[in-house]
Length: 217
Image (cartoon, rainbow, N blue to C red; front, top):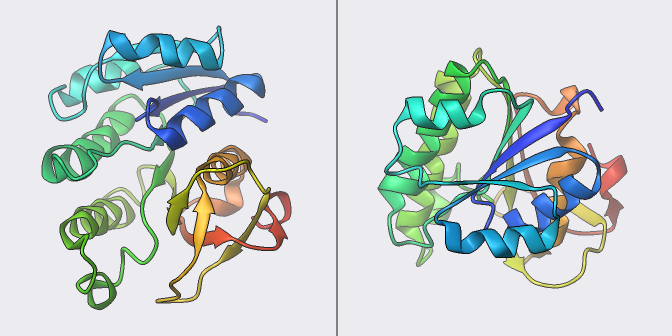
């Protein structure tokens, strides 16, 4: 793996916690961005070598975020406000991380979005309409404004559940619903694709299925 270090935004979230544990366990130099120092103990329990940085993407400047990214080989964004600050965190905060990555000359970036966020007609009928709007435009900005600046992959899992990793997924057809995926499997996918050039510039909607993660990408 040519990628030796990764910084994770939203590391205290459930996907983020799984991923920093897996990344650190795989030998990657891992930095976890958390909201406050009180969350550091949880991160340290996942791996003693995991570094932490405390700030929020909605309040930090692009320059400040860039300094935290500088020196890493890859950026992973699992950040989310759980509906509390969709514009400030899920949209503008995420875009600030794109800008900061470009400023820091770190091209590899993996974004966790949501299944079918590209489909207005589909998500307009969900109770999470505003959440999907934020995801929709965060994805579009990455795909169009940063397509030549970042080696990005957008991962779009369906309904998230807890449970041990199955190690297996399936790709979703447009508007395919009634599927779910364990958060730990999402983290496994992030780690699996982090160094795969074939995934650069692509977007994947997926759920738990019957195909091994290792052979899916």
